[in-house]
Image (cartoon, rainbow, N blue to C red; front, side):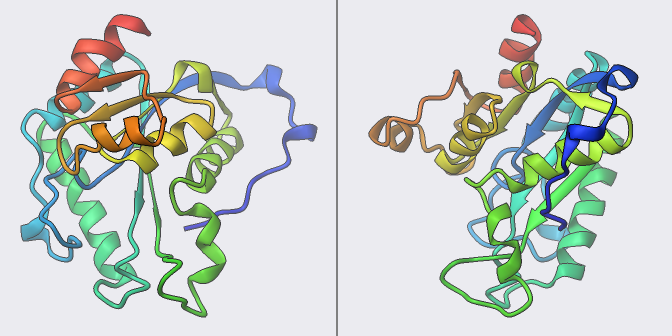
Amino acid sequence: MKVSTANFSSIRTDRVEKVKVLFLDRDGTINKDQGEYVATREQMVLIERAGEAIALARRAGFRIVVVTNQAGIARGITTIEQVEDINRYLNELLSAAGASYDRCYFCPSHPGHPHPEYDRYMDCRKPSTGMVDQAVSDFLEDGFDVERSESFFIGDKTIDIECGLRAGLRTILVRTGHNEEELCREKNITPEFVADNLFDAVAGYVLGTS
């Protein structure tokens, strides 16, 4: 849940390895959107072939990062401990499909539900780029330089596409989950590609253009 960004001016970039990253929304993109905040492991159900899609991306050299708004924490619907447990369980499900994520970031804040502990993380809430920027910073600390122009942001909502565009990433909207294709058009927020689901996005587009 760290949201600070690093000052890279003193870092020797010739000593780091360049990597490309698949930034993924969680609910509605990887797992089924149940119409409410996922608070139990039973509610975490992968979308068909989502695990296979992530496995394909990993084999193609992509690092996998999950970035998800979890305002249910600020709203008192879920807890940080529940969200962290669900994220661990998500990786267990992905592992069963031969996949996994490298990092997972979640934002507990909500502008309509002020909270003395979580309001300081407001700039991590999508469509703000705080979680993406933090991931890039964390990768750099570990010796990896994220090539944003070769990395993708995939999600089911307009805020995912807007976040990806602001962060300088290539963007894909999936029709699973909220499927906000029409809303993207209304707001003139244009993804690079629209896919039926995560597998279609990865196998049908990402791996053919990267």
